[in-house]
Image (tube, rainbow, N blue to C red; front, top):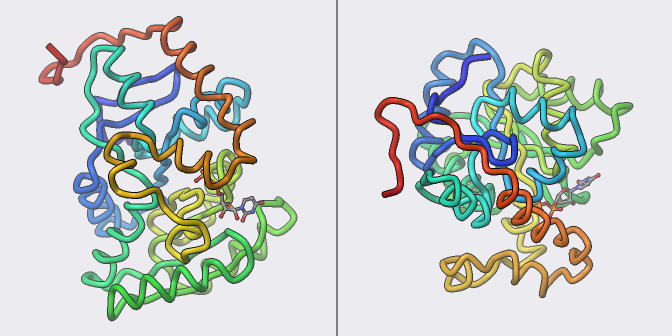
Length: 258
Ligand code: UDP
């Protein structure tokens, strides 16, 4: 597997690339020009890191992904503890609209897979309203159940989509892509979590000031309190980072935090 960056770092064993929104778009441009296989993007959060500790298939999928962006302020802080700097949080919720804008300019066709019935359609309508000329090749809720896979892959391939967004939450969405990447005909597949819910307006996004302060997780806990159990992974993440300090040898030309 070709990795996009030799400056990839590992946080409790999980790969994280020092990407920006701009560099992610540049990679997508390159991959669409090549069209030689399916390139996988994962939006890694502290939750991903902790799930991967107990799920070897998920850990393997993350290692085999072409780009693992840091979706979570906890990863930026963890990187600093490891003496590295991640340039910015690259979230699915902000990344998908940016990819959609570029797609409208370039004529790339998008497929929105996942979320509750009707949500992907609403998210697609919103993206088209914001980006006139954008082509949505298809939307489908479906489910990450392996029994549905053949039908969903056939649907995505028949749509002629160039980029596939999968919103089944982690780890299902990333495992779904990993299992099917050899038979998908898209050029790029990306797991996007709750992004369609945000774009469709089903779930409100944290106010800008909270996002800037790195408190989006707190807002999500307030809006979706049933997440508290999932969020117990956050203190475990901090503990894991503090007690398992990988210190990869710095590569030539690598940014080091002074
Ligand atoms: N989801 C789904 N099918 C499933 C499980 C989840 O469509 O079997 C969707 C869910 O509706 C939501 C997304 O996957 O749109 C996951 O959202 P969540 O907020 O949990 O993801 P996060 O952003 O925290 O990764």
